[in-house]
Length: 351
Image 1 (cartoon, rainbow, N blue to C red):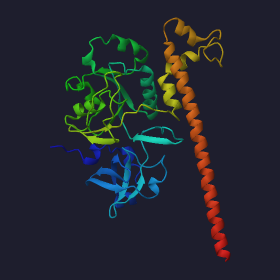
Image 2 (cartoon, rainbow, N blue to C red):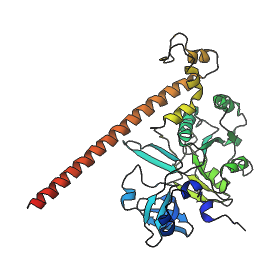
Image 3 (tube, one colour):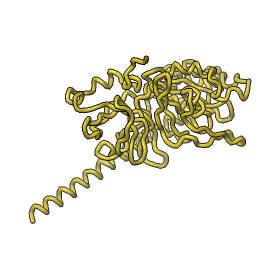
Image 4 (cartoon, one colour):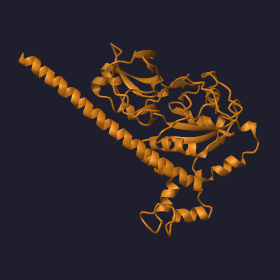
């Protein structure tokens, strides 16, 4: 008999328990957000699964509203959300074509960065995902799917030499034995996220880890190895062995912002080399005594890695500035609205 409480299986930890006041312990119930839809969210807790309408102050701010993986407090009687608990981790990106943040998932413990052993494999994209994961403070593992389609895996191992601290597992997602090493990342009480482009086999891998058909799967286009979108929205799935798995739509665009620490951790080798440069303001191009260029010439650092680091640094700086300007504009607009409302109320009182 499984003696683990439903809340602990959902990932309830002391970190969240300590955030509750005595009144909240008596008057509220914690629930975890399992899926987010336009008009409602699906949550799960000690009382099982239920739906909550998306309305009220808690859902007004796009950057703060509950997302998949969040813990909410529901009033025991009305079942209305009271507040969202502080997050242990948060994945977010710049919304495509917008000047705001789009939340991906919260309170994730482990992340499988999923790519495939075909022309979809892109190390610069892997580094982009890795920066996001490191910023959130989660444990990461790179999973290369479709390993059964080509026995020559040497090019992938060679490409990953600069990431010796990143665990790499090659799998055939349809073979439950080959995915066995990944079960350590989805233990009872932990939440596992799968991040990767469409068509790399995320849904198939999810089903193999869960031991059941949780997500629809689709094939890939043979001409470019690009996949069809098989997942329509982000959702958490409980699995037989305990724990939760997050499945999310494939993201071809993953614009980064506000992740400087994650970026520095992902390119820690370049940061370490930079400290050895002769000049403190070295930009690692043609300056004398540049340790970074010396490492490239010696074959100790891939030039592609330096170029990708520069690209992501510029992107993060640009998007962070855009977000800051957008937030400042929103604050000014809110102040204007309040000023107009106060003026209208003052005029009404005079009459």
